Image (cartoon, rainbow, N blue to C red):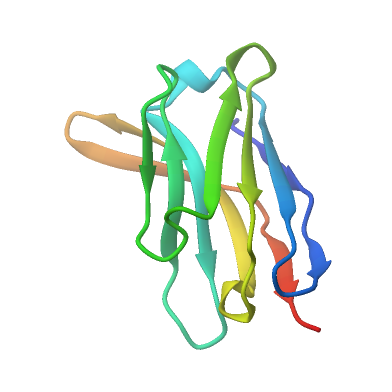
Length: 119
C-alpha cells in the first residue's frame, strides 16, 4: 500500500517562504513522477510541480519561477520550496505520485496540507 505523508504547511505572510515535504512509503522510482497539486476553495485542483526519479521537473503556470521541486531518492522524499508567496497561493497542497501501466494512470494522494498566505 502506497502512503504519502506530507508536512510543512501553515500560515505565512505575503512575500514569505515555506517548504513542504512529502515522504513516500515506497521508492520514488516506483512512480513515473511525484510532486504537488493544490486546490483553492471553489477552484479545481491544479498542478504545482512534479519531479521524476531522474530529476526531470515539470511546473504549472502559476508557481513558475517562484517554486522549486526537489527530491531525495534515498529518502523517498520530495520537497516543494515556495518563495515570494502571494495570497492567491492559499490552498490545500496535495502530494501526488503516479504511475502509468498499460496506458492507464494510477494516482496516489497525500492527505493534504493547508497553506495560507495572509498578513
